[in-house]
Length: 191
Image (tube, rainbow, N blue to C red; front, side, top):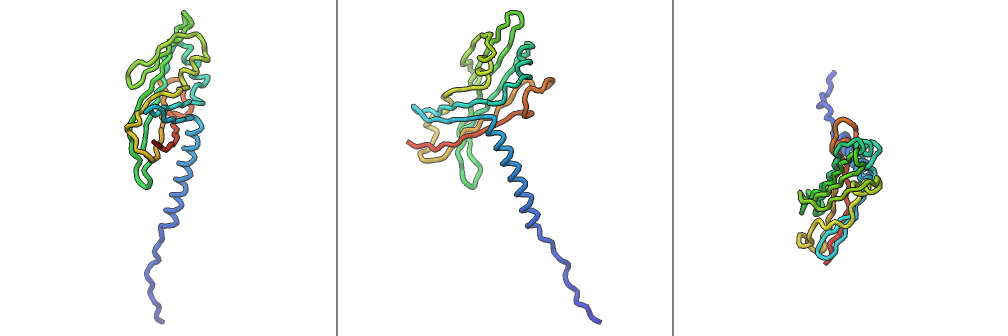
């Protein structure tokens, strides 16, 4: 009796690859959705500037407040990127800016010293005893003129991405997201 010898069956990797890509897309989507819930961003183009309004909605936790009241200097750093949305390619970073807010509480005077720097330059400084003002100072930014419109091309889609981190990160868990959180908002530049 003669049997035909068939070549070994080859395994197709396409279904496996498609499955992993689907899982990866779901994880990235869930991470993006979570990030957008914690940093709200509104870009606005006015007077040759891109004005950026953003708020860190869940960043000022009870642990952060307790750390501040213990006298520990607490700093929130916001890396803001202006990026060009390039379909089917890697998006291009047009400009970056770093906004840093610090608060240091003096237990003797019960006053908090607030400091905001923009790209290493001191922008504002204040002293207060109001906890609500400290919270707003650390988490809310209104119409910061971070970028010039001369960097932009007409009728192109851009987005502003904000990555927030907190210091100190060791010891008390100050940040509910580990090392930081981010969010983004798109806009189209029209002349």
